[in-house]
Length: 203
Image (tube, rainbow, N blue to C red; front, top):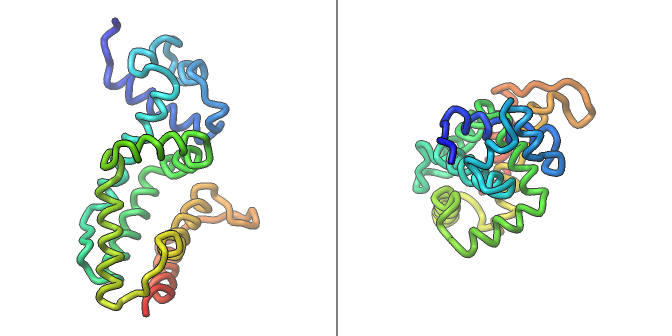
């Protein structure tokens, strides 16, 4: 068995994400990955059993990194607008520092892998972004109990609270808006949108 090389392993992970974002999951193969990394086709199998194992481990690793950054400084007991500001700041900064990660997760969510992950995580609760989910649910519950916001189904809350930011980030990463015109996201745009979101959610 060949020895594991950390630098080579990190390069494999980085190139895998790049290819998946660029070519989609259907266009991702171990052969293409090996060529992009300038390694033999057999080298990725030193680190992963197969393509599915690689993708699974990428999702878990990148999800855990994202969870740690999104939770940084976030207190579920904080006032609603204060907590939302921390969440938006963390999500915004994380996306700017890791421009391929959100498109990577979009590829996963729009593929057959999403159901595999849901099944796995339901069978093993607490293995993937559980702290983030629990913190957010407690934050929402606390805000409702204090009378700061109305109780809403989680899907509606998320769509109002975070989807606007994710859409702006998607336009920014694509470099164009919905009309195909050039688009660059600015801090001012982010916080104008944030204020509108808070106004829509608060009583």
